[in-house]
Image 1 (cartoon, helix red, strand yellow):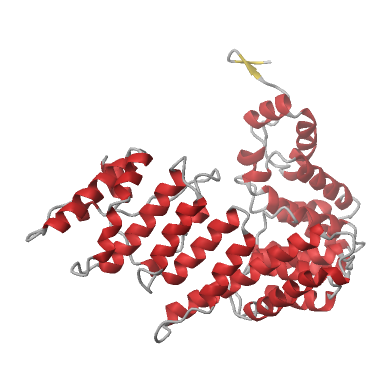
Image 2 (cartoon, rainbow, N blue to C red):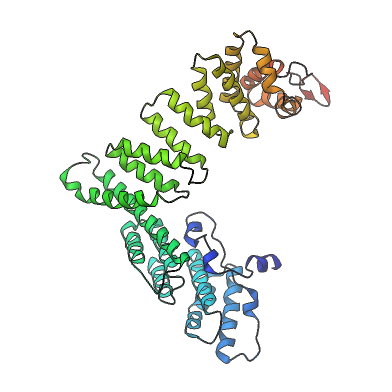
Amino acid sequence: MDDLDRELGPHGPVEDYNDFSDDNVSKGGTNLKRPNVNPAMCKETPRETGFHRSTRICLEQIREAVLHHKWQEAAEYMACYPQLLEDTCLPPAQQNKELLWRISTNILHHHPNSTMEDYNNIYERMKHSGVRHHLMICLEHSFHLLLHGQNEDAKWQLSSAESWRHGKESAAQHQRAELISAYRSLLDYVIWCDKRFSNSDNYFDSDNQGMHDHFRQASLNLKEILKKPGVWDPFILSYVDMLELYDDHEEALKVLNDYAYNNNFPPNPNAHVYLYQYLKRHDASEKNLMRVLKILHVLVPSHELMLDYSTLLLNSENKTDIQKALGIILDMLDFTCWRTNMDVWKCLKTVIQRLEIQEDWENVVCEKMALREDWWPALHFTSFHASKDLEENPELWKVKASLAKVLCPKQALKYTADRVTNGKRT
């Protein structure tokens, strides 16, 4: 219980809360973050009124029911607890509203008989309980509708939130408004996709005017959003997908290049991945492909596309490109995730075979392995690795065994076919 108390400990203001409950929906098969119920709120306070005592006891019962996953019992108590919204005497009024919002949605997520009407009632009531949480609740409500396939209703929620105003706009409120606008544009893209696949025979038929309207709405807003520095991966992919369908390759390439190379944006490996994938789809030259992968290698040397990079370098007739390919593959094998990958080891063997044609190939290999000779054998070439590889993947064992002495010529490696049986080597 102490661990659960810490889990349900004091919580901060909603401005610091970025993990919307619908992002972690338990019914969808993922974990839902528990609402932050401060146990101190369940304790008796001096000069407590009868009303405050009732709500305190009610909250304590809700908390106990939630901790023990008694969702029906929690829902019954929760039906009485919203009267707390009518209390104007307690100082942390906004905290109480957020608490009610979080607990209510958490119970509905877990309750086996909850309905969309229950969700809608809670969200609508909380939106009108105070201005501080309005935009965040609208966004969470739209996520929930989207998860249940109600795309148009989700868009309507965001459109109404986009036009919502109250008093002087703060910096935090401005940020939330921009986020609302971004997701509303993304929903235009989702609806555009639905119409696109339902009218797949002819994208440009006059009957598809609605589809083109959604394209214009989404593209205009996404174009503006993507001018602002940040990580906009799903928005970039959506915008480029639409531009590709309408054959606006020049704009798509410009957007991807800006996203990858604009210094105002934070370093983002995915930006280079998207650019590479786009160039590859449109038969760009190997030189352009390698230029993109070169930067990706600096950011993520273990990325799976480094295998593509090595293959492109092997296609080159330039002597130094083969040497670069050796460095790229060795960088991949520095990471344990590639330790038993057959394609990477085969690529390394191909690189070595290409290098052996060169006169100074042994010096090249020694130079690349100089900083690895102390720890590579323990990572790849122990007797344990030999035994395991021979048992699970004999072909991998053959490839590695043929490379062991080439990569570590000065070391007595134990990567052999001998295996230990009953404490003796056979």
